[in-house]
Image (tube, rainbow, N blue to C red):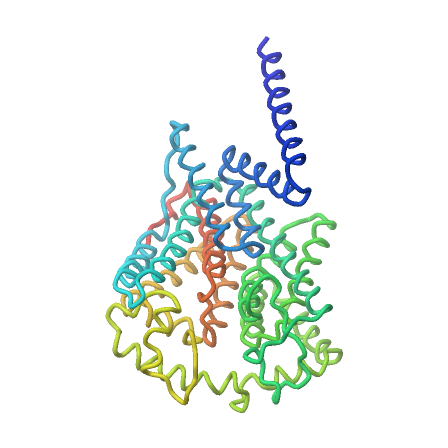
Length: 447
């Protein structure tokens, strides 16, 4: 009788859902109707299992407006809240780096409420809070290695789509803005791909965060088919970051992959050398010219950073306690007083200077502590962990973080909201891996 009732219940739900789809397709154009249907399916899945919301957030992050990503994540948080209420046995997981996170977030809150541009800084603060909540939800929802694997697969799918669109842009052509290139120093560059982002450097930052973990999954599977699929994704992402012509991005990726090779498989160093030699032999002149201008002060994009950094340092000296506030609007509000050589800028083109300027000395120290302990968590997993797959993932997280921060020496990597959340997603993966390895052992610490 119970099976009969359950079967009838499923049939009734299927009938209702089928009628709903039919009504939507009847009332709305096909494209709009399909979007609505996918949206309804997504909502149902997220409410059914909140971890689906994490997967969807990772997939949609680079593909849609951040506003809609925030709404999707809000739904995930609601679903998580319902899960807590329904499940009487639910217990919150211990956050390994809770003191570091607190020490980082509290100065951000203070900097936002004392900002020169209060409204815009509060909006930026909300982005950081969403990023923290992603970490919090990941820790409490990704409770086995299979779910962690699904989260990483979602990341790789999104990155591959981004890479494919970037390659499409290169083939079809995209407008090359004057601010993106010094044409006198780089006459052969006709385009720089941006894919779904607003700027080639932002795209490069995103790919630095995704390429090492894609590499890790090539090592983590024994299936030839899966290896080939991950390798294809890696090639697509690699070609795309090459076509951003982002020198900081190239250097950041080089560091990330160097770290991965040293920790995981030093034979890769020989592969890198051979790949580099091959690139020199077959690469177009544009790439070699771009590489040759990495340290050139004759290149305008290099030359203008020096006076900009000097101006930023002077701004920090005058606002070192609590900073000027979060976001580019606060920077725009006071930068004209410190401008040198007529250089117009919306941020300092250095993530460390920018964090100090925005959040003051305590925010900067909190940021450094947060980064240090995030890396430390993954390093502990690599050194003391048992599961070699989790160890490789942990190394890829370290590589991505250090690689993108290396890029951050010449760019403000947290200028874009999607990169802020993506950065925390990588840190979340590292911390979840740590918890899965040590949750039943004394190794689990708070720092």
